[in-house]
Every structure is written in structure tokens, then in C-alpha cells.
Length: 198
Image 1 (cartoon, helix red, strand yellow):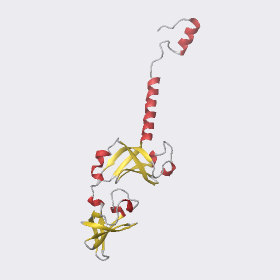
Image 2: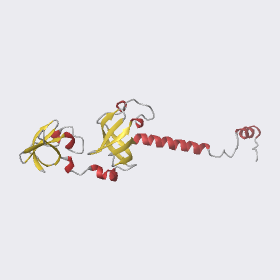
Image 3: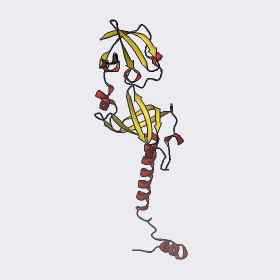
Image 4: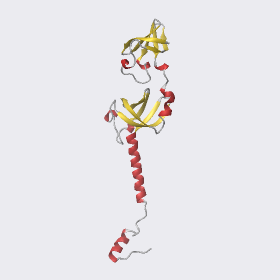
């Protein structure tokens, strides 16, 4: 239904629908997290809403604005596929990891085990702060469960570098000895001037 915003509160927006008022809760304003409702709506604004709940006993009508918008999760795997790199902003820290906003309505999680650069940390706040901008790499996307698993690009690059260095070292130590032979051959050559022949 179409209606008009008549009041803005900390907990949501009241909308008039032909003489009947309904409430859009903060969680139904948009797909992305809304901190300040005044950044999204203004009194007198015309909106299209969906009725999501009617409580006849309390004469309450609950509305949704976001359900009249495209769901960003419907196409999430087209943009945020495994291996893709993105810039995001830390929006929430929990004891098990950091949530990073990738796009409106799309948050990904960096598990705490991937934040310490190999060292154990007790809380993501030890290395990250809300509002911080990061480069992240998508590890996996689950559209049904609305989950995106992330890792820090820096950490991924460090792991790659360590792996490459280890490979270089193995390649180096695997090279054949020099044409002068063993250390004993070198010492003998230096003392006698003769090179041992095989």
C-alpha cells in the first residue's frame, strides 16, 4: 500500500494509510542497518509499504519498507563469489568475529581465528575497531542462510608469501651440488690443486 510518513521516532516511523496509522520498525526500514532514521525518511514523504502483521487486540499495524525493495541476497553470489576481493567497513564486533558491511544489506563475517595473524586473540577489538575500512576476500557465500565468510586480504597475502618462500627454499635446497663437488672435494682441490674425478 501507499502511505505518507507522519512521525519519526527512535524505534521506527509511523505511516498514514488512508486514515489508519501503521508502524515501520527500524528493522524494516531498509536492508542495511539504519542508525539514524532521519537519514532515510522525512515527515511528509510518500512511501510504498507492505503490511506484515496485524494485531486486532492492540489495534496495531506493522509495516515493512524493505520488503518492497529488491532483496540484495537474491543476487549476492553474482558479486560476492569465492575468491573475490572487496572493500568493506567493520560494523559490529562480537566474541567470535567481526562483521563487515560489503553492500547495503550484505554483511560478511571474519572469524576471530583469522584476525590474529597467527596469534591467538581473545576478542576482535584487540585488532579491529567499528568503522574501520578493510580489504577482505570472500571465502564462501551461502545465499539461503544469508552468510558470507570472509578473510583479511593482508592475512591471505601473508599466507601466500610464506607458502611461496617455503617453496623457494625447498627448490633451492633441492638443487644439485656445484660442479666442484662436496666440501671434501673443495678442500682437496685447494690443497693439491687437483679436482677429484668421478
